[in-house]
Length: 466
Image (cartoon, rainbow, N blue to C red; front, side, top):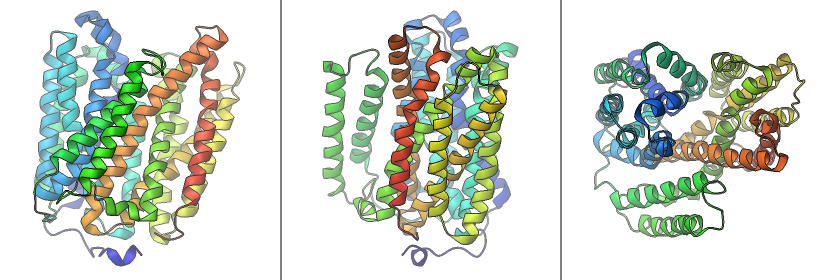
């Protein structure tokens, strides 16, 4: 069904210097993920200098909201104007936002600057994922997308380490200023080495569709962030936000049926692969963030590690994720058999969460290291291969829209996962009458097991061949 729709290139696009273009794209991707994680460890220092503790959480939330809400739009913009100019412009916006973040005087100013930075960051995972699939022939797609999984793993775990080291050495403002040389390097490499044919899709950008889906995304994320903690789930605020999600999604579907150049062509949902991959990616994102965000807290609380030690103690997860993502990508690309690897990855994720949910205060670190390595294997088999499966399931003209949708849905899942697991953590602390977060984290991770089982069930619905 799919292989016939794609015309894999025999070599790189004319004019592209593929290694340099790849490096530029991956640096941009690294920046977008790092700035989700690098800031969290610097929040106490930021609050000490700027004040505004009541708004301090929005320094992280504003960035995530802006990035998630704009991700889908960038794929369509790049269809119209080309991958290279849109990527370079987005990195430039990100760099300007980083400069503004480092120069602020108040917490509200920092929240506004982080929002601006997040608008640029919305392109920095989506566009490299699209462009890399066009730079390389289809048979190498899984291997190359495995590199993006490596970047994601390094940035997710390495962000807090880098943030702590930079804050201690030079102050919190340098966690933003350090983006300037990296961003300029990404711009230079992409401008010099990236040459892709313009997709040539005419027509206007679907701004009404972008506004509707962005409104629905922001409303859903706010409901997940506030529900059960700031406001009761049955409060007027949360019910109003969930109602807004339903209305905005309905309006989005209505509009997309009529739009001349829709943001997300509804014909994509006629494909059985895309129908499975999108919800599976949402669940995967929630499991990724929900498990990894709280493991450092467990390591610090149960083993008495410092923040840096806890980050390093996650290396068994990072190393297995990287190795499996790269090796499996190469093997899948050679065989074209995705489904066994994806089912295996989801099943291994279930096993990893079961093991972690049974942790006790007396569990030796070596045992924990083996258990998080199991989780790394499961996530390594899943993370980027779900993206490739969706890409291979559509025609070239729908590649950007499909990739944008999958990557944005994963970002949505990452954000929702953090919020939901935080709510579960609060509930477990109250139920068990303790203030020691490490003591209840295994019970929180237990709730990931049914989500992972549902992920297995979804992946079994994938067609045998894509």
